[in-house]
Image (tube, rainbow, N blue to C red; front, side, top):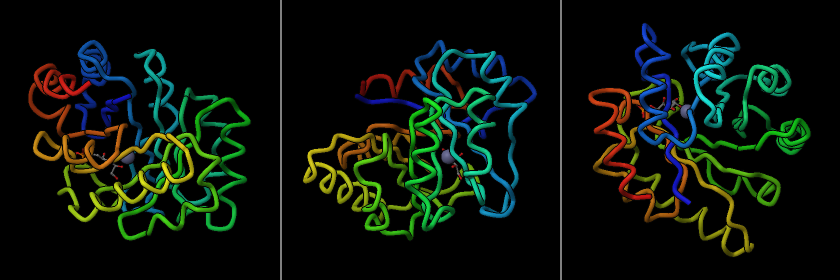
Length: 216
Ligand code: DX5
Ligand code: ZN
């Protein structure tokens, strides 16, 4: 099933409630929530108070993407703040990805594991059967508005093939630089959860969402 998850990092924060309600009404399936700590990535975004506000604004699942060091320290607090899905980076949890995934699922949330563009899908092997969603980053994490990395297409396809080989239909999320031009390409390669920040919140939200809803 095709899922559209607008990233609020690109939203106009002076009117966050209004633009999120518009995207919600226009067909957003999830809302993507990019947490950046200035350590794992060279940027700082937002945290618990904004997530609590999002939880009041929309009933759609809150798809929390943790671009932070030691995410295991904050899983419970993100759950309490309203997270429905928590995606951690494999690179931030080397040696304890499975334990962190189990912690997320133990709190009743869906667990995602993300890999950066230059991390190979083989890094996901230890948790291939344990995860609800894999996130294949299609830009270097840390900033919205970047250019899509074309080599990600092959990576998405290889991950989808590997999952099919194991009889798994786990969600594959893509995130970063997705536009009207490459949207269908990522779906054709096997992605089914599509994160978009600029392509939804920049310009006319309703028109942008109407374009993407056509593929559902
Ligand atoms: C980047 C974030 C992405 C980003 C997407 O580190 O993980 O979610 O906000 O924004 P666009 O769609 O504008 O690239
Ligand atoms: Zn993200």
